[in-house]
Length: 114
Image 1 (tube, rainbow, N blue to C red):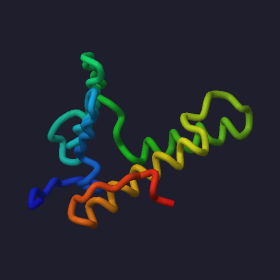
Image 2: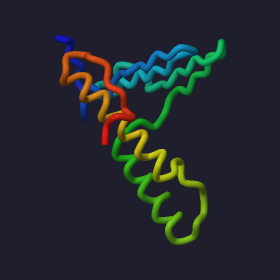
Image 3: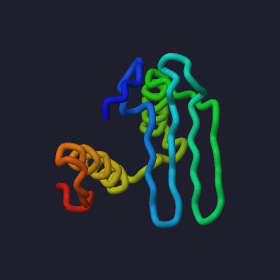
Image 4: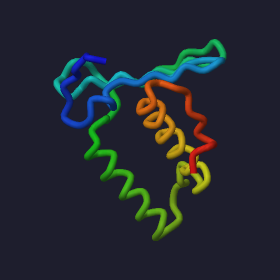
């Protein structure tokens, strides 16, 4: 809890891990001060996949997401990553993580958040 990660953005976005019953997903960013290359590791059902040297700058993601959204609105070109309902589920997951942290680490069911 007392570890300080220097970052150009938010330190809680530098590293995270989700562990499930059949695997895990872990992001190691730590690029705010050039510590290591950003990576995503996913282990599921006995298979490990890794994605490295990702473009992880928030400015790039906002720019690219905005361009994709505008292209989709104008032309319908390219799929949207999530349906509206799926986007709400992702938001509930993020809100559950904040609620869990605020309550001292107690489990929070994202489906119960409205």
